[in-house]
Length: 98
Image (cartoon, helix red, strand yellow):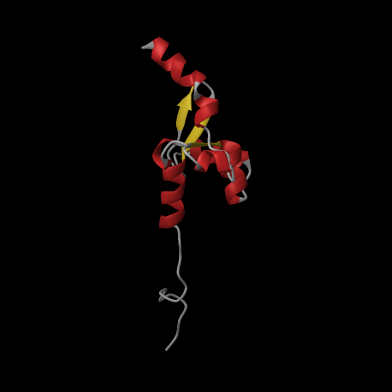
């Protein structure tokens, strides 16, 4: 068990997807096996890393994986949260008046 965990932790740098990395898009792992670091997610959303830390502490935000002290976010979870948070003003009934 410990050997498997250490082996997985050793592979973390290979699994972390860097945004805009064409090599990761070509022949890389499927999206549900790709991970983003806290700094990747913070940069993507224009947030500070401390904001993500606060969300984790309050059990908010996207699901995350912690291996030792490394925090990773599955790309598919980040994309799902973005899709769920999408607002289409043309379809929104709030704020419109007849």
